[in-house]
Image 1 (cartoon, rainbow, N blue to C red):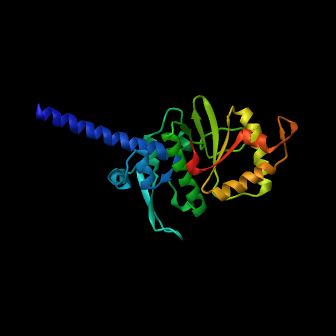
Image 2 (image 1 turned 45 degrees about the vertical axis):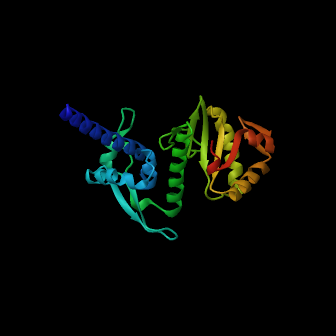
Image 3 (image 1 turned 30 degrees about the vertical axis):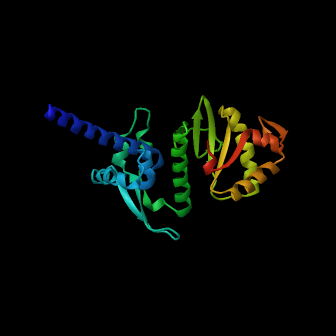
Length: 242
């Protein structure tokens, strides 16, 4: 009957709206804030404009809050962040309720904003390539270990991911090399994937890693060569992730 079809269609639309809201909240439970463009990709929309009705509804219902960002070099744009109410609505049994994080605009800086949004883009790109992404915000590592920007899993293999927008000092890269060489074994990782926004930065950081000639691994001083580095570290620009 036509009436029955209408009811079913209405209930299906309501269920789809709820699913979309839950998907966004689960993403922001890890990422805390994002843009409409990125959140549209969370829902696999082809255009950012299609997600605004969902985001506005979630703001009205207290699940999200918004903040206009006006920083040098960018056109002003909005960030959408999860509220305390939003985090509670997607809290799971294994979550510590006292560690749930909500959006705090005052803590955002230009450097952390760009880095955070790039991590989100790589997270969605890896998902589309068949990887499972794990946020490291709640990852528990041993003292002295380094937290990567994310973990990618596929076919039983795990890679730690570093999004490198700005170069560190050669001394720090030497330290990171040693830390990660120990962590790869301790955490059963397959390797470390470094991702860069451009080839120039990638090539120069890779050169620094190749210049590291030794590291203490499992308590033993070991000689390193570029070939050994390339066995455990991969250096790519964002578009080369596959």
